[in-house]
Image (cartoon, rainbow, N blue to C red; front, top):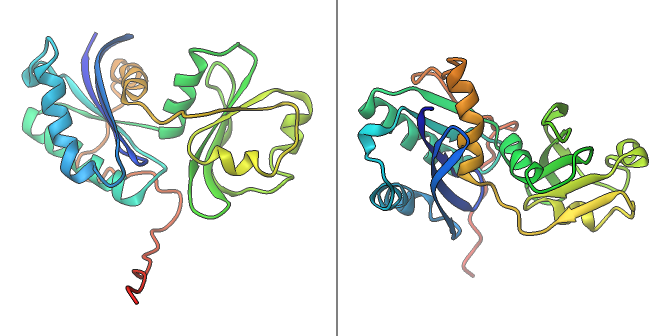
Length: 227
């Protein structure tokens, strides 16, 4: 199986992992806002130093492609591309939402639907809906949440909601079929596991043209006044 280095920078969490097919060799995760630019390469170096592999053993670099933080995704992708160029290995993009769903699917019952949510400011989230086998039931999209969100799905199915945007939905729904899983953040090892399947199928990204899956155009905000 290919040894894959995976990077996850779509949210405030910075995560890196080395996987070998289904085997998680090593992982490091940093829960520190705005740390990606300063800490990502250090985490990679530390991860390799504490594992059985060297940089030359890496056969591909996988990147969590979004949706998520515009700045975080840019930092992650630029680092991944740089490593791919230096090592002459392919780049593999993996949906952040699907990787989150994979992680939760490992510890919950089959038949439960999986709904990852990433904070997108105010009452908006980036979300998608998956079956317990990761079949896409609702494609990744931005969504403004209210009490009617997912009503039709929740009538007949138990749905697991998780991610840093799920508390927004918890505040507006009263459905007994809505189950909320706290403290679930994206993990690079899940990115690596999904990337292994793409590696086997030779599904690689174009290093020159590949861009993150933002889902929305970037909107700059003015800094708050110090007065």
